[in-house]
Image (cartoon, rainbow, N blue to C red):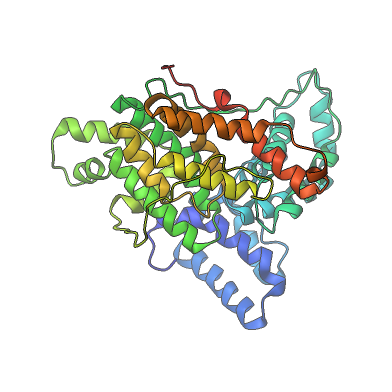
Amino acid sequence: MRVLEPAETAPLLGQTFSVVLQYWDSLEQASQTKAAEMIKELFEKKIDAIKESLDTLPSLAAIPTLAPFEERLKAMRTLEIRDHYHLLARRCRHENVSVVEQALTELSGFLKKHQDFIHTAAINEQPDVVVPELIRTLLDVIIAFKDSNSSSKPRIEHLCAKCLGLIGAVDPNRVEAPRDKRDMMVLHNFTRADESIAFVIFFLEERLVKAFLSATDTKAQGFLAFGMQELLKFIDVESTVILRSRHDGPAHVAQTGQQRWDSFSQTAKSILAPFLRSKYTLQINNSVQPCSYPIFSLKITHRAWLTKWLLDLLSRSTGDNAENIFTVCKSIVKGQDTSISMFLLPYVTLNVIIGGTDLDRENIVKELHAVLAPVPKNPLEKPMARENLRQCSDVGTPFSTRATNGRH
């Protein structure tokens, strides 16, 4: 924190404060003192970054030692009840698990204290937007963590259920909470440069940045950092953004690169910016062992099956753009959240179906048949086997709902 610029510090403050709050009671006295000194130094030397990230900072009121800093945060916020609910909902949508858990804890307490506001807002002739926002946020959090291996998953699910219970039953005819879902359509099988660049921008924004923020394993973060660095090179942002900052280079190149860079959200920019100049390398063998199809069986876990099948398909991708993108992806799918693999699988499968060999297509059909074929009842008596089959079947069924390709 001491060596980072304010713009680089701000995105980390919410996560830092949340971790301190989450583990405060388990820290020894000396560690608590150091944590308090760190927060004091942040308020003294990084106050601009704190002001910039107020929306993501948790309340420090639960820790008496940090109460003076909470008073300073309150003075900077001055929020109405409705604004406080909006702020808590925004923090619940954060990518980092510690930030989400702390926000849910605060939300449950705030709902208890101001439950009458929510109930009145829900029954008004024109229901307040804060009610569907909270409901949609809580449901999205449950979905986001349903396949997570985080130790916080049970607590997060419990807190979401508790908050939904405090909100209470609402009239679905009056309060609607539709899910906002962004999709990426690939219509030309990665043969067009503009479409391939749009895919990479979407992949970085919607998957890799979020996975990087939520990762608790430094090794996993390292692989993601390498992947983001290489994909930024692919979309030609690295050179163009740097050239513009130095006021040199061809004008048309700078404009194109800047437009691509500007398409990222502010959060994504703050995470991706260090990787414009980073020099990560991998010292691993990136080759993939040939698979014997079908890969699926009741003895293999959902994660292991998904990773093994995806890696084999990534190694069979066709076309220059697809090969450049998916070669990078081979380096980052292992050991990551399955959301990355789930996102990539439909796109690379369609790429291989369209541009691959007859044997490739036969193997894909064989794999889907293995996953979706009826299974005798006895092997499914164990709950883990049933859940494993359900997860794999969910992957094998709806490719058409996740990616669309214009060639057949």
